[in-house]
Amino acid sequence: MLKDFVRQRSNKLFDRLKVADLAHSIVEIDAWTKQDFGRYLLRQQQLMLQQKYSKLPGYRLMHLGLFPHSQTIVGFEHLHSFHMAPSDSVAPESSVVSNYSEIPLPSGVVDVAILQHAVEYSASPQAVLAEISRVVAPGGHMLLFLFNPYGPRGLIKFPMQLVTGRTEYCFHNLRSGRVVDWLSLLNFQVLEIEHGAYNLPLNRQPRLEQDGRWEKLAQKIRFPLGNFYMIHAVKRELRGITKRAHSWRPAANSGYNSSSRKISRKNMKK
Image (cartoon, rainbow, N blue to C red; front, side, top):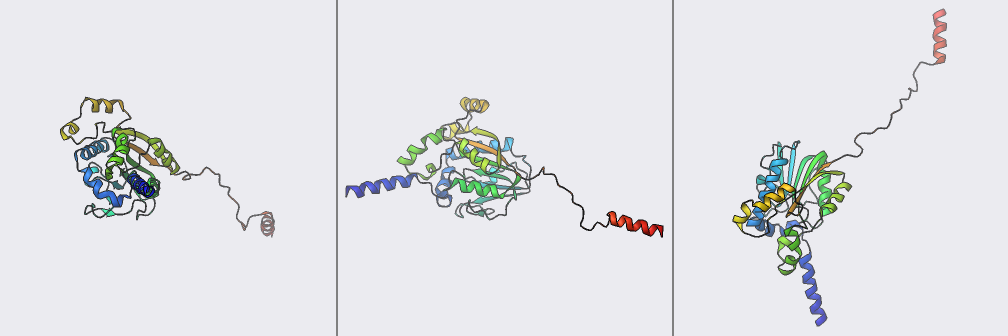
């Protein structure tokens, strides 16, 4: 009896540590994004996108993640922009519902891909990154937002996951160096890594909405311990241009050889 009791308790504990697929957890996570701290993260990420990345070139822009598509891409001027939701329960009217590891798009058609916490909230982060790499065109840009495991929210993730079991704390804590290694294997060159949202993860709207001295100082010195970090990467084709010298071979029947020259001379003498 005691053995069965311990086994049941341990199974429940391990179930709390598992990261469910985003299609099953998006409803609870979407409710969290509407709270004070969730809105604070959204505002900080929107400011970063509008100030530095809204002028990225391209025709198609794809957004995947937790936050509303219309608010996230304010300032982007791409002719075709769309949002892919993981479930129809939280999908806006103009969005597409799809599994992030099986995107229904041909390869190499997206110029800019914005992923807002779509990787760490997925059951398989590697599968999501591999699928995004497939649909991004050569020379296309990826803007990847993830929770910083060394930031305030990343540090409290494990104890809050054990104690409360709340869905918003069930995500993969991914170090930036690990994600950069994954991107290099997918032929992405990382251009820069930005950090942001340095306030404590508390639902206190007045304190979160105003940028205090600590927030401004941390942004100025690019302090690497914010609540999230953003990776800007570009897809590079390894074999797009070859330096191999092409040898030109003469045609099989060129009609111009030594025998033909002799025949032409005989004809001229006649």
